[in-house]
Length: 368
Image (cartoon, rainbow, N blue to C red):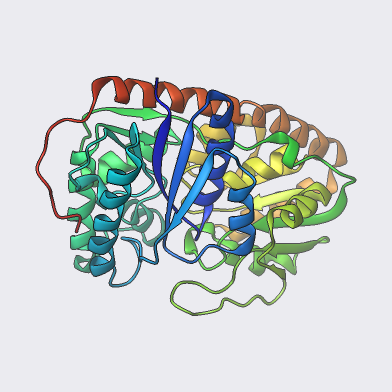
């Protein structure tokens, strides 16, 4: 029986949220999760969240991630640290929420989960192939995928994008992300539009909301960290910035918001849209394949580059109480498909399959 997973995680974006949701859902199955955290120091709230989960232990390493500026020395050092953790912890499965370290000489079988990818991000956001400065990243991702016994993605769209950018993988699986409905209960709705996420990430396209905010009869609020890894802080003119909020504060805003808008150019799954749907928000989303896959007819979709369409769609929804209520109900009903128990069952089955096979013998490889 599979009892222990070594899982890499970062505290920069939604991977932490995903990892903790999965770990909590695996607890009733007796699965111990050792989180190897990198990318940025964990916040006090993140450490507290991990301590509250009895089947989770956290090991912190101050290493830059493969998509960050000039990361490769840190990637190599992180690789040595991870192999030391594996030798000490003796996990049944290694679960990597990144690519490069899939190339290491792991003793346990390895799955790589594709939460995002610079090359697919570039195509969606910049409209072309990533420049030559990303060739080293490209090669590291390919080696990592080759080293994985299983590649998992949260949507078929993300898996297809990964294969399109990096080539085929030996074995793959789609397991949607999840959120606990109890953490995002609907509240008394107010006349406001909300968005949340990494505001410095062009893929989220929150700048479009700021541009149309003055054209709407309701106020637009945007929650999230405005300062990116490059140190540059994004500013807004018409939308009201809430700053970085903890989960409880985000849930409170979602409970109050009537509409949640995420006009994304690129979104592998969209955890924030799932949270907002559970909180009873009507959804207005970027018309990208992954969001179509997750939400289908339970949301309104707008072309990410069309500000007029975004403003028109929001105004029409603001003006139509019945349609807004029906759309919110449809979104919440669909959101219940993405529960933690279902996600945990799928991952537990994948882990058990990998553990039963064992790790294929291989020589050490450079992770960068």
